[in-house]
Length: 589
Image 1: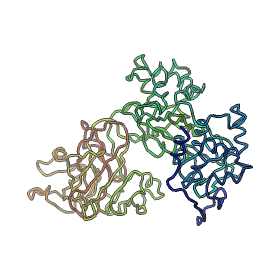
Image 2: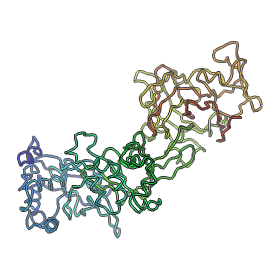
Image 3: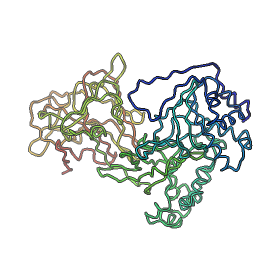
Image 4: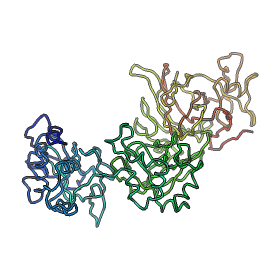
């Protein structure tokens, strides 16, 4: 980059003198003293302290960056001390900063500069929120030594003095020069002898060449960056794999790992995620797509441990594979590398029924009174896997008078799901893990006044039926251990209408109501008015968690109360099993 271009890109439109008076009203103790200074800009501040920063000031002068950093702006500059730059010169075999080309020094400055103001209080484990002007992210971490917390920058430098606030940004003083990554992900894996088996697999499957392209040479912007979860030789050895040949023997089903259909090819692709995902990005999302088509990994944070594919499937907990935090978040020129502590492989699953309690939310299940008492009221944003447009939502344990019609005696209470002058009410659920396949979706609820007409959609695609959660539908009378129906009515005929009873409780009849608005057919009915309605059939194209949304499209005031949602493969029994209030399950007779 030429000097004119370098200066023009950095120079703000407004050049002036800004004096920033910094005050602090926070009661939280800063980890570093905050220096308030009358110095106007970064360039001038460094020039006033030549005993510490004369070398870096010289670099700014050579690259013409001193003009930009003398202008108005919002910058964060990591500034190495004179001692740090002297050590860098010795490591590079140079006697002076003048021995570097201008382009090399421009890269150095850009990698130490962020067009954002980021205080040290935001230096948590992981990448900073804004990339450097070089285009790579800086990662930070904290270590507690002898009762003192010290911040490390890019695992290359120690923060000596932070939060020197100036008129155009913040200076953080560091004890080493930061170095951007020059290796591609492929080169980084190949250069580490601990990854030799995985590296050979990259080459044999063709993924080495795929991951060996710099962003500047990549025409497809969607392929600029990738994230690799590498398994070391030691990790593979613990799984009984001590060579590439052993890996190929176990996973290659065609003998040609370069084939996209080969199982080893899919195995390696399953360890590569599209995009740049540092550890905070990994745990932020519950699942991530991989280069193995239609296969995802799920991720979960358990305390400080990050687990891959730690799932509960079909009621059985599946242990996850741990990511080795201390060896991860390694920046490459075209992505980021994480190191696995345990091996993991593609899980071969087939569609099975999922009988999901909507009350099974992380924030609810960890309550001390879970299934014993009601929760506090939740506002939109309080539940990570449920969102809504209405009032406060609450987890309810059914009172004694109602403990006959909901599984585990609990449900999720929404105050309204209706149209109104301020817009239509809606609810979005993040589903449990669903295996690829086609499923019928049943919404199990307690009939109330809300939800007069509700459109269900799956991943944004509307399902065909408009459900009426406030319609007066008859239940079934239980005589002994057998439900009785009016003449000509069977569970199968109700199923054809998109109606079923998912409950196995034993209610006593209280009153008679007309069956499905037919005055000639009555059924004795207990007052709960609970049942399940068929929303439609969904096509799950990728094994993952998905979005199920409910939108009010017809008027109908009042609350709605949801108990379960059933995802049942379309060719399997839709009526059995049944679910008892005490948590037991009634199988098909």
